[in-house]
Length: 66
Image (cartoon, rainbow, N blue to C red):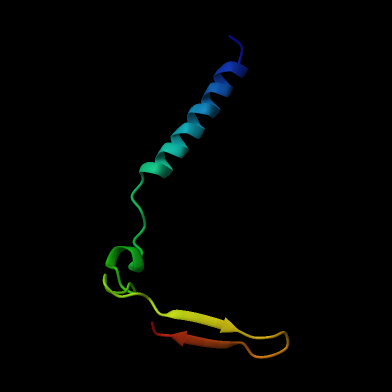
């Protein structure tokens, strides 16, 4: 066995270990995902947001409650 075979197998093992670590590592805390803040109540539908505007004009943002 020459030096290239162990080097190639080492690179493959290192790549597999990195991919496995990224899959299994603890996730970072995110306020939105971990607390549910910003989500609507289960029975409510979110409002519709309409963004309109033409080139060169200020965009108009309209929130319509359904």
